[in-house]
Length: 77
Image (cartoon, rainbow, N blue to C red):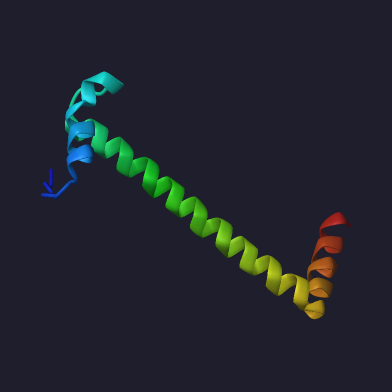
């Protein structure tokens, strides 16, 4: 498994060292969980921003709205 050397602030270092208090078996488990949660949040934020951009494009493009409406009506037939 790859290893990573990082520099932490003292308060962050103390938090990681207190891993057992939070129910983790090791520092690695705590850091891995934290990275997974952050990764998920960042990806969700990226998707949210992308969907907002698509919404802006859709709202400003009447031709795209008509095309979408036509396609949706075909699905209902």
